Structure formats: C-alpha cells, structure tokens
Image 1 (cartoon, one colour):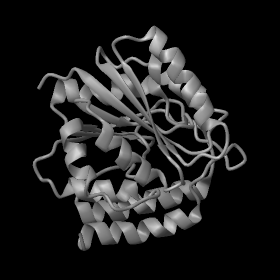
Image 2: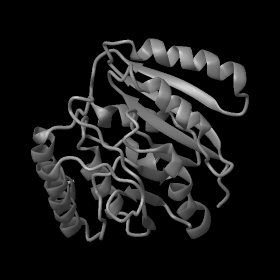
Image 3: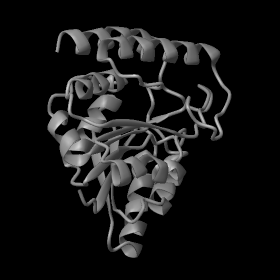
Image 4: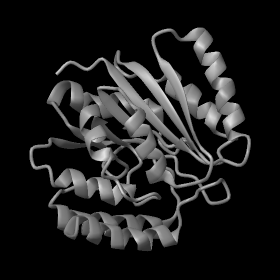
Length: 244
C-alpha cells in the first residue's frame, strides 16, 4: 500500500501554555515524506487555548501550501475519547496518529511510529513507554503499577501481548480507524481500553509496538488523568472485551 498523507489528531482542553509549542513541533516533525493533515479538537477549553490555536492557523496558512491545519471546536468539555472520535471522523489521511496536546509524547518519535506501516505492512502501531531505551521522566510509582495491572488485564482478555495498553501514542491506518470511530462509546480516557478491545477482535490486523520516549508531567504542571479514571478503566476493559 502506498501512503501519501498522515492525519495527526490533537485533542486539547485548557492547554494555553503548551498548545502553541505542541503545534509548532507537530508542524516541524519528520513524517517520512507524508503530507500532514493536523486536526486540533478543542474540547470546551475555557482559557486562551482557542485564541492561541487560531493564531497558529493564520500563521500556518501563510507558510504551508501542501499541508492542512484544521480546528474543531466543542462548546462544552466532553472528554478525550469524544474529541478523538470527532477528529477521526474528520480525518482523510492514509495514516491517523493520536498526539496529546501536552507534549508528554514527543513528535520526534514519529519516524519510529511510522516505520512499521512503511516497511512491515502494519495496520496499528502502539508506542510503548516500557520497551524503550529513550529518555523516560521518573514520576509516580503507583501510576506505573496501575498501568501495568490494566495492561495485564487487557492482555488477558484480548490475547494481545502489549506492554503499554494505556499509551497515548496510537497510530492506525486511516480507513480502519474511521470504520471503527462510529462505534466508539467512551468519552473520557476509556478510549485506550475500548480501542484496544475493538482492534483485538479483528483477527486479520497486524499490530505492532515500538519504543518511545516519555516526558510525563505532574498534577501541578497540569496532568488531568486521575485515580478515578484508573478504576473506570477496569470496568471498561471488562465491558468492551466481554459484552460488546
């Protein structure tokens, strides 16, 4: 299969301090020759996030002729999963990549994430924080324990041998994720276990993991996922694997 374009979906909520830097890094990123369609989904931000995005769009249009920068705006905050669904359905790229707005995940890793599509006929690629020799910021012990447990439970039910089900870097063939998007139900961080359960049920898919860097941030720096989302993920892993 020949790939020409990549859609990069950036869900964002109240990231006025980082969104400009994130978009700049995505624009400058190496996508191995693929044209970029950057779709920013503002999920009901109440700060200056939208203002800063619109400024970026104006600058982008004057300097980039072969790529697109698109803004989708939701008036109320619905959650990461809902924002991603909107972005997936708007996308047109041959490959679709999820990029968090806070730069915990670095666009410098795009070539690593894209290589399995270009060389090994991948359908899905997960970027793992736990099989990499790249820089990994040291943060919360219990987050890593919960992540390991959730990944193990997910693997038991999907029969996949992932090391990082909860990773923010998930990349898909465009037609695949658009065909799944209409079925997505979770609105918050449950996207991770839901999409993993759904792709595991398509037995013909080639799923790869690659090692990535990780620069996590603290709650004081704006981290949004919390312990309640961890407990909710337990239900979502069981529900989407056994009852959907």
